[in-house]
Length: 345
Image (cartoon, rainbow, N blue to C red; front, side, top):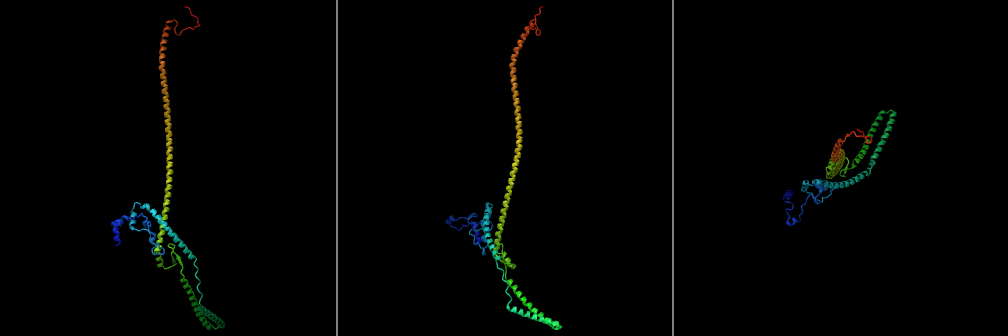
């Protein structure tokens, strides 16, 4: 019937039998609702581990539904919610283990404070009297044996010795019975032991069947699962912290290498820029020299043009002066000094 109901719920929905008014007020439960148990979604619910045991936590107040768990496992938000749910479960389990460890400590104190077993009761008065009579008889017979031996009556002394041996056997029998009573009383006093996993008291050196029955019990298995989960969770957290630490160290190292690389690149680039600036300065200096030369050339060209007109006038005057001189008797180049006398022809 339950299987058929579950199949109908899957096909037609859980609200298939509700009226229209009820459907308006009906709210479909999803795996991320507060009413759903996150412990059951991610791992196990501790309320399910100790049913009908001394550590029974009672029914879980939240919903356990296999379909919701399957929906959670298929959800794209599964990986994002698992750490949150596991952290809540670990916190709940740690509280359980803390309470259990307190009980274990109290149990150890009880065992350590147990009074030593009382010594066995003394031998009964009847047995004590029998032993005294036997010891007295043995003592008397030994004295008689000694006397007969001194008198040379060997046969009679040997006969008394046989009686002494018989009495010694009776004495040994009585003594062994007392020792057996002590062993029996010590065997009846069973020492107790404490289970470190679930905190239960056990009988030390108990039969293997009883020990196995305890190990396979709900309480022992339940607390074993809780402790194993806490250990696994802490190891995973420690591993995650170690990986994060290594990742940060690697990131720092990569940034350092990148800075060194950028520094070397800037250094090379700076050297190249300096060379480029130096070449550019040389080019500018050359260009200034060229421009200066061009300006000088233009100045000389201008001067040459101006000097060219004056030079033509000078040349025409020089030619006129030469013609005038050619007519005079005094040749050019044979002029006399103004102070020299004029020679008469």
